[in-house]
Image 1 (cartoon, rainbow, N blue to C red):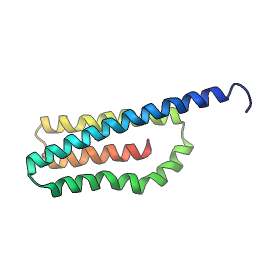
Image 2: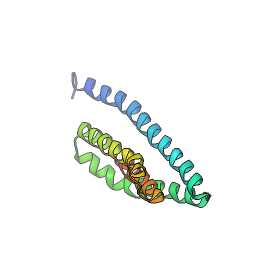
Image 3: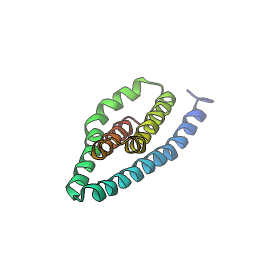
Image 4: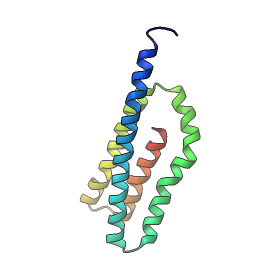
Length: 121
């Protein structure tokens, strides 16, 4: 593994950091917006606490299993798949609210799905 194979590895790692930052930034912006939405609609900080628990649990519980899974899959395809699923999950919130789905359920489901994908990412 001496020679030309080191370049693609370094480039991949240089791309991973900005990708992880942008994904985390987007997920956290949606999480903060969802928390504000819950406070405005429900008027209870307890709902916000449950939202943050629903986001933290998948990452804590699923990360060890997803780490093993990620080692078996092509990283580039995994990143693309995670981004596509994240986009669908993120779009689920405004679409669900627009069609009149129960607000609390849509907020929890969308952010839970983003947390599951973030654990795999």
